[in-house]
Image (cartoon, rainbow, N blue to C red; front, side, top):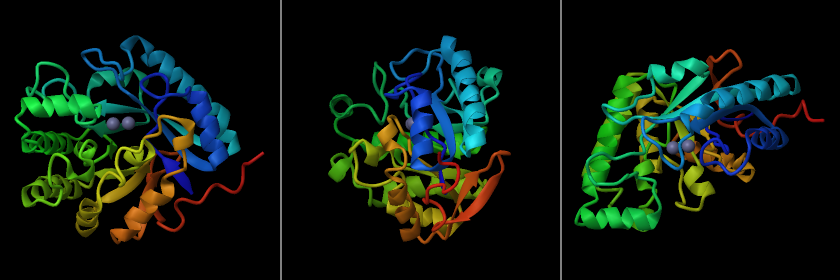
Length: 291
Ligand SMILES: [Zn+2]
Ligand SMILES: [Zn+2]
């Protein structure tokens, strides 16, 4: 069974319309697809949805859900909502107006480290410029990132934790920091342990693979292994920004889960209940429903 609860469209920084993404997921044999536009924020960015488009987004996704449901594809209206301490959080009532089916909680932004916008997943040259201003000390970046992630995990108000170690996006080849370093591991594992204690659900996200930024999933193997040891439940998120991202990387996500020792994954069914599925059953296209 194919499922993903992380899909972007032209409402934010995706490269295709929602209808095209739904069509592509159907053709790839998906059973469950969650749309997660970058939710509007208290300030404007070039990749978040604008507030004035929120209702239009919701009605389009709802109409796609009605259209595809009879053909065996369940579509969910979701939002990828930032956690920025003191400013925005996944549970914020500002998003209640569209009654999303689920909320994906993510950390992208860093605070008080630059005069301009500073996100961990920004383009490599921008990230390098920010690092220069920090004297090259990347520990400032990952410490704040995991601090923010832990605070979000504690606060709750989301259904899925997005791309757990996104902070490594610009760190291909260990350019800025050592992901095997003791202190880095400790910061990541602290967030894992608390997420497991609170019975949160995290995604295996293949967005970095799809965009050729990194050669591994979010999270990395060592973090996935810790998650398995602590019993943290996992689902799948393509972080698809184009139709070609749908389904192409599910096997990589499943292989990563298996390598970490996971025997099962979790998917959200049409009643929005989390259900367990064997890793070997995940990743197979829907057989019925094709026309
Ligand atoms: Zn994200
Ligand atoms: Zn995303």
